[in-house]
Length: 103
Image (cartoon, rainbow, N blue to C red):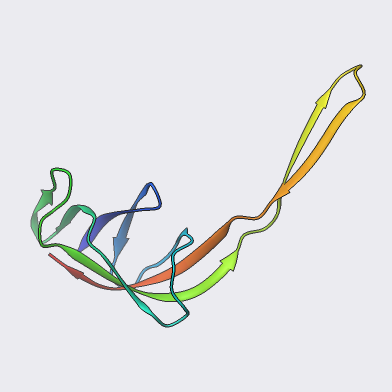
């Protein structure tokens, strides 16, 4: 069984037992999270598509890790003007393990 969930302004296709990195969510390591914004559920017969979400469908996930990605360097330069600027960014993430999909 699979589902398409919406979190952090993005959509992710998930299956039971799958590990997934999403935008930072509140919760400590080991906590369970429930997602109710399910766009599509499929796997047994015809897939169910929501308008915009599938009613009664939930996905349960366990927080495996909270962390930050590698640093991404952003560099700007304008030629012949002496303008140079360097900036770094580290995005926070939450790693989830999908435990159950309820259709």
